[in-house]
Image (cartoon, rainbow over all chains, first blue to last red; front, top):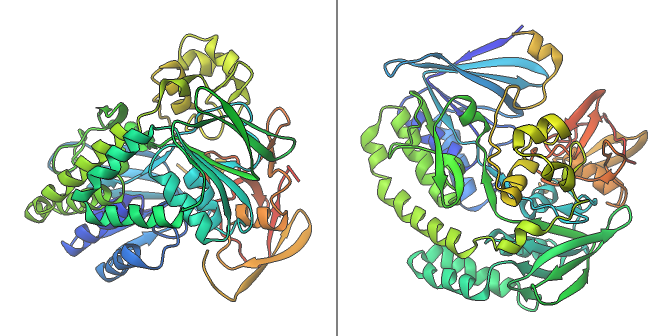
Length: 425
Length: 88
């Protein structure tokens, strides 16, 4: 019943880190499988991109002879044979409702990140999206032309998505960035060391001329009957309503740690976030398991590409080629550190939700119910918070931010799968 | 969105429609629904729509060709696909 696949190296996640890792490993002579949940490669940032660096990397991957599996949900993983010499790692996955098992001596986890959502009254209304979420849905064909769209939250993604909306005939009615103007200016001033990023920033600024841009501003309430009508913003002193049909709101990114945690990879704190600990060759604490891109620390596409190359070369025992990319990775990580400093979340954002605000959207659990518990575990047992199909991926980081509880847990199946798939093993 | 002349015929809650090839099911529901009505009803009966767009939040669950609870943002429309939502 189970389809078995054996490769030298299996890579989970076909975003920039996974694609770069696959290229490096395959070009070094390894038999490589590249898996992704989406039907196509590209990940979030290169979703459906057909020009620029995405096209260049995808073409390189095409030439390298990588076996790509799209629409794959990896729901479990284990180290079947441990030991540094020849570990064997198994990944259990579902593809077109059928069970598959991928085995390899080396696994590279390039599982990316998701958006940080902070609950506030009204955030469960239809047409409230993540920032990257709105863009992802629009790239999939969701209509945004002539829609009035408010962009709010924090980080460079806000401007990138606002520009995407404008160039796709949407109407950005405003951009609310919670960071201060001084912090954003300091970050922008540091970009001279990264000319490509500076050019990008200037292009974004030019594209968004005339659109209201508020610093020190964040959403406190979304209002509407069955769908969004208006959003209230505040700068801490005054508040004002902005009429909009859609809200794109995200407060930065959270590394996806479920699969690394399930395999036992050690994690540590980095810029205030839990991330996978790796050595300079992108090796995790588990023999044979490598990690690259956002799960090792949110750093963006250029960190991900460098880490992916290093992980791919290292996993294919091509250490010299890996080392050639150390300097590039470390320089890009420097930029990421400045980004984290500039877009640090203000303390007021811990108190956006009121008692009646839904925190867990899967099980409709309010902040009142969660806050009456002592821990994440107790909240799960008593309120079903985090027990729904998203398994705490949305409410977990929000609760960690609001209440300061550590919320990391990962149990198989990591994604809901059919009974048939579970029964086949 | 992929620019292509191909269109795909699908059925949402019994109503036929056509979307551009490459359109995700979540987007098709929004398109054919003019993004007004909810996609899903929550466990306590609240209207919900897609949130994350990348398969994390499960708010876009729909029944696709008889299989319930599919993440509609991850699935591309295929010819003849039958989609059911509980929110419309």
